[in-house]
Length: 226
Image 1 (cartoon, rainbow, N blue to C red):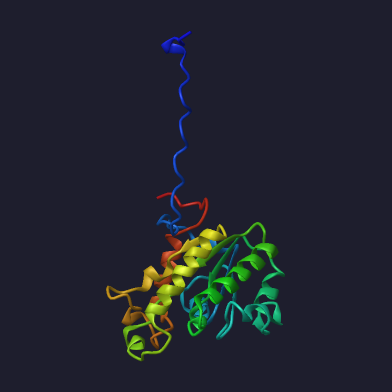
Image 2: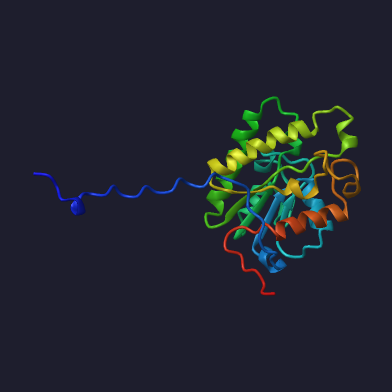
């Protein structure tokens, strides 16, 4: 017997497709108190950020020349004494962990090696800090002057590594903040007036980096009322 029209089953509405993974969008700006529970893990560029950005909040774990491999084993000076960077971080609790690593690995022969080792860093951070938001930052570019040196420290190589970091953020459910966007000129190079040696940022460059982090907060950040 035919089913009356008004009783026919209506197919359930399909869920909307998931949003494609993307960098953290612009928001904020947040107050610097947002960074009070943050840790910054990185290399000498993060050291420059600590010294020159003007941000007083947060904890800093960096050394000269670290890689996603050496942070596990190489003993360096840290806020907790001389020990590997990841061991020092394990002593503390953080709400957010900003990672800036990769420029010292540009000479590695395979990006797959970088991917796999960086994944181990993320796994270790998540094991030690299960409640923290892990934020992967894109590697900052180098200047046009550095590009002309024709070494492996070049923006083409950096772009390839940043693709790996973006992929890792999606795979590992981390936030991705495209910090490089803050200091890149129209030619894809580190702005000439914002660097000291083609690789490291000066005060203005570090301040621009901080401004970018302020306007790209992660999670439910409280934005001050106007």
